[in-house]
Length: 168
Image (cartoon, rainbow, N blue to C red; front, side, top):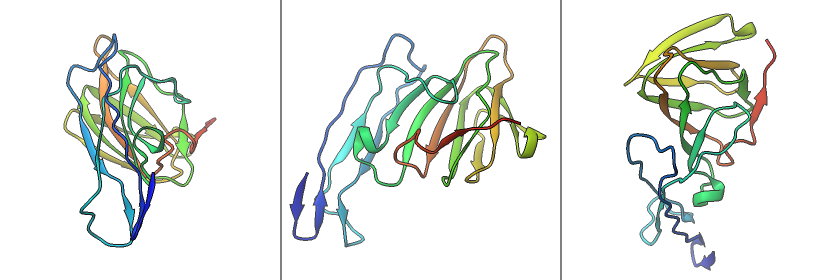
């Protein structure tokens, strides 16, 4: 990190190979994250992250962390690949103070949500979902033999700090 005339520039390059259980596609995300007062950043850096192994999460789902504060120096966003194994479901949870956007890359997922997880919706490959901050939810993979895979982005650069368990 270095001070510049117009802000603070953070530089990093993180490149990792896929682990032993890779998603069946290559993911490459690029973000410029020089914090400056101007709307345009002409001297920022593009950060590439290729996660090699999933992390354990409070939701109890394999999560390949892509963009976050720790991996790319992001200030207000995280983006990850989440796998819901065949027949599995996440622990009920919510994200305190942060919105979530999801794109289903593969599979069919039923998400229970709201008070007591009394409501539900079913989404499949190609669907975008928006989950408001603080809304309890629990995604369930509807397939007994195929993993569901989703690209998840949150307005929380720390990724797991805002996750809270929910007991319906």
